Image (cartoon, rainbow, N blue to C red; front, side, top):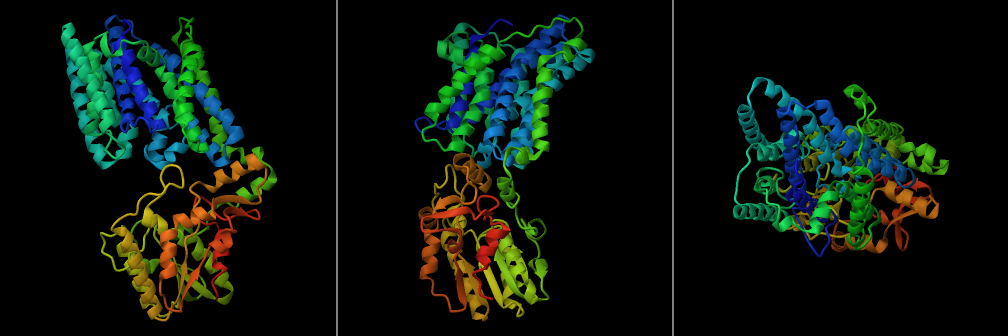
Length: 629
């Protein structure tokens, strides 16, 4: 096919949007820049359809040669990126992160990474910035399309004529779009990552080849500009809050379709910047996301001024010295071409090495000294987390009971109640006293509130009533992530605080007070655990970073005491001003977790957390030690 400057420029328009969206510079906001991937899909569909149909028409099309040609261009740059990450990860990633990187590299090498990410979390989740190869999900979707599409067309060619094949593809494209809309409502993560919901975008690109439109130069220009405006409108008006891809994706996809069918070689895209960026676009796309993750890990201010130029330079170098290198197909034997394919061997070597990293749990024992590994093995949750914690409504009367026959203690709260319950039960074990454990993931205080107040309101009220009515239970421990309920989770670079959530803000405090006072009125001893410091980053990252910087592991700081007080100022002030009866006692984790200036993730070689805010057994023991039996 003759080189088309408009398609090359369209690639630039796509990669610019994706890069700016991911770096998110404050001087130019592109909230819908992720739609650049949809534009890439349309381009791929058009080019692949043209290659396949021209080969079929000339009786020269070979599925194996098609695969080899795609592999020669796509795989070497990808494997170089994966190799660099694998090498650098050995020196700079925690065992947990290195193990996950190994899994993701293996998935990217086998072009199934989109399936991995679909099972893990959504594309827009906060944890996405910790996944070095998240962007390869789109390459996996394309490769899955490349594998299925030519086989489908070759089969159709044997039973249908050209016009019938065109009609079949037109119908399949329409059905694919409708399926995408349906699945986007039912399962947004599925629709984002998986081929069945994305295939219509590539098929529509194919229709641009199969249904060409003859326009005069003036109308070509108008058609191209309409396509450009649709794409820019999508970049400007869409955001991660919108259901995507869904019906909204029709805007950038249709824009790309119009630009391709316009076939106008002048105008908007006819400039050196767009042409260069378009030529380097695949390699820029490959390198930019790992650079974004570096900035996230190191929390470098104004990182876009470093990251964007570095991404472009690496993209240029990758295109010039890797992507653009021609791989000769010397043997007339297709089988020999396949078995001697350098891309195939790159996949086997790099993907195999990554699989070994994953299987060996990031080589924690081999990469770090015994003193480090001894601490790491204690970074774990309490044994009862899986069996006794709930994420949806369950009858609270069936809550777990621990050890003693005299169940006169109860712990009520969110997931932070898990380790506290277990630590308390361990301490009471010798006295034959037992604990009943009530915990619901992410549950905010909801006593006296209707079911529309929170997802756990029904459970919370039933659990509280059970405790109130149970005369055997004489001691109640209450624990919540109060500030998470008041402010929401921390977003972006910790410790940026979001606004108070109204009307939940007042409701949480009044609900909590109502429960405390009612429990106290029944003569039960009530122990209110004040907020525990939350680190915003996993203890593993803090621990290994501290080790790499200072080569010490015994004591690792988390956040400053000043930040803890700022983060929790409202709930701490509320507790200070509360007029609770004398049988209500406050337990202050700060006494155990902080000194006069800093709070700690690890003290005296003991990890206090196993993630960013949940306590380990050791951390919970310290808190429970304040409870007077």
